[in-house]
Image 1 (cartoon, rainbow, N blue to C red):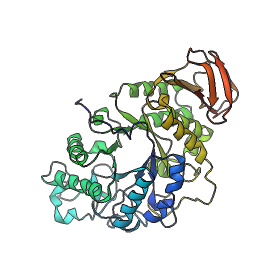
Image 2 (tube, rainbow, N blue to C red):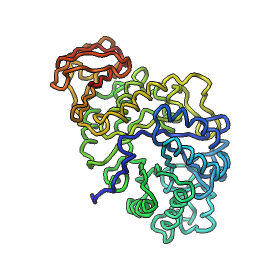
Image 3 (tube, helix red, strand yellow):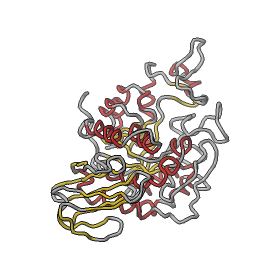
Image 4 (spheres, rainbow, N blue to C red):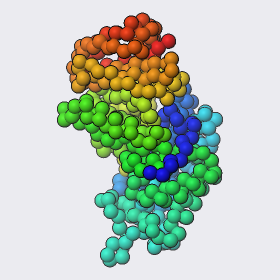
Length: 422
């Protein structure tokens, strides 16, 4: 592996919030979403990820509105959301709230009526009959050919357009592993020459960290689902986490319990994890080298699958019940170096297949996390570690305890404790 690019300081120990503009409000516009910025800022969101802002192809369109990921232009705004000037103002407003904005970038394929199909048909893959084609079984898109002269320069130019025009702060790169790594390297060099950016790859190939700051933790998510279904032990999850620990030193992993794909196609976090959904959210926000992701409406919480190709807005009329839950965890990440940069120590427990228990430590700062990710109630555990001495505060209740090196706990099914040394 070649030397990776440096990760921007503001990406380290940050958090990410995925914005499904179409479904976020009844209007589904940039301006309507902007009204939520103060709330998201108060909750502690630091980076906004806008799903694709580009227009959707009509040819091959699925449903009434089509897929965000089948674009008809790389440098136009989807009129469903508003105008280019309104997007500029949304980014500027987010910056005024001290939040960064990254946009979804779909480089592998376009929609079937992208203007390049007329202007540059040679930039696309063709089947044996000379027709546009694609290799992954998606009905509404056609694949680009990254060996075609001129394509790469045009793609990088389009990416730079959004930085120069809207002052965005980075890219979430859709299905990044389907695009040659050397293209992404070229794109990063060119785009980073304009400003320091965040680079997130939707893939889980270690070598893509040569270019990208963050890759997905799909593997972790899949084994946590297997555990919930009784098809895996917690030790398998620990093995996955160990594998992640051997990634390059600066590599970050995107941990999540939901996103646009999971919610629409596989179920909400409550369908997948039941009453342990919040415990796994605590994990995602406190584990090492994690960039935790929150999807639109999870803070409500949202219990419904959102339609992907048709209008189906999130219902914000109910109280945002989990606002303080996430605000508390985001504040911990921002203020406690044990979470942002500390070592991680897994602690053994008698119920090793029900409890995830670990310490995060940086110099004098110590955080203890206990998660009952099982369906069993009243699990008792006694811990022993030299770092578990002194006064600790329960992060959520505010109650204070004096630990003597051997504290004992009892956890109900799905219960989570986070203790911070004072």
